[in-house]
Image: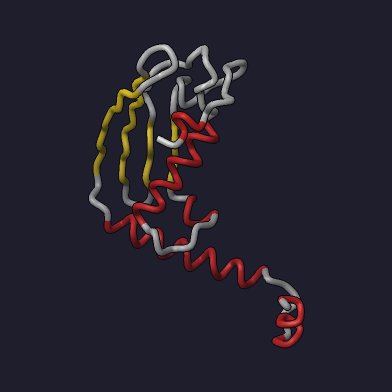
Amino acid sequence: RLVDMMKEIGLTSLDGLGDFIFSRTRDAMLERIKALPKGSWSNELVTDGYDEPVKLAATVSVRDDHVEVDFTGTDPMSRWGINCPIIYSKAYACYALKCMVAPDIPNNAASLAFFTVSSPVNILNAVRPAPVALRHIFGHM
């Protein structure tokens, strides 16, 4: 049906439409971020770990044109599989921020481009050979 519709209206590519959607998304996200109060806020959560409690720490900084999350202060990697690779932590942090800032704006690369996540090596930024099979335990927090 899509190909038929494209033929009917004379489109040979969806690239222009994609560019338009991303442009509108970028503009809308930037408007929402500019409306947020500027500053940095930190919090910690101590939750059950595998053999001992685990501290998760985050600082969220709202700038004029982007939002940063830093997981400095989070507990070190665990010997158990509850560690998260940084890409997993980034994905969940960025999506949560996007839902909070602009739940009605389409979720695409342009809407997520305004968020950055950083972390030293720790349970939310595990490096090889750290076990990560149970990453969802902390990745969803």
